[in-house]
Every structure is written in C-alpha cells, then in structure tokens.
Length: 117
Image: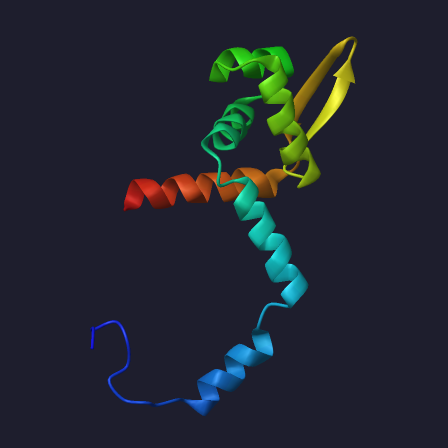
C-alpha cells in the first residue's frame, strides 16, 4: 500500500455531513469543468494574458501571440462562448477584453500558483 491512502477503512460522519451539505451541484461542477477545459489550451491562456493588460483588436492579438487572425478568431469564439472574453465593434475592428474581473482574478491566481510551486 502506498502512503497516499488510508491504511484502514475509517470515516468521519460529521465531516462527511458538512461537506455533503456544501457540495457543489452537478451542473455547476460541469460548467466550471468546461471553463477549465477551455483554459487548458496554451494559446487561449496567451490570449487571456494579453487581454489582462488591455483591450485589443483581433489583429493586435494575432500579432502579439504570433498566429494568424483566422486562428485567433477561432480561439476567441471559444473563449467568448464560455463568457471569458467579450468584444465590441469599433468601426471595422472587433476589440476584445476580458469579460469581467473574475477572469482576471482566476488568471492571476493561477499564475501565482504556478510561480509558487
């Protein structure tokens, strides 16, 4: 037996009841999992990072992450579908920004975590 599991069967009913009462709903768990799946791609992480600095048009994002506008647009559609980024039209340009402050916090805390490891 490895050291990462219990050596004998034991449970703590009080702890189990506390956790079960606060357990995440299945739908919320699925939605959060979907967000992390979308963020599980290095290109999309780079886009989030770029947008954490300022709003950018698709052309600027493509230049910053060194990809084609078509490839960037595809990634932005996925990020937009998960409400991680939003856009507005500025003349003929589509200007993107993070959808809200939570996305910046999620990204920043993730960066803190990997730098802490």
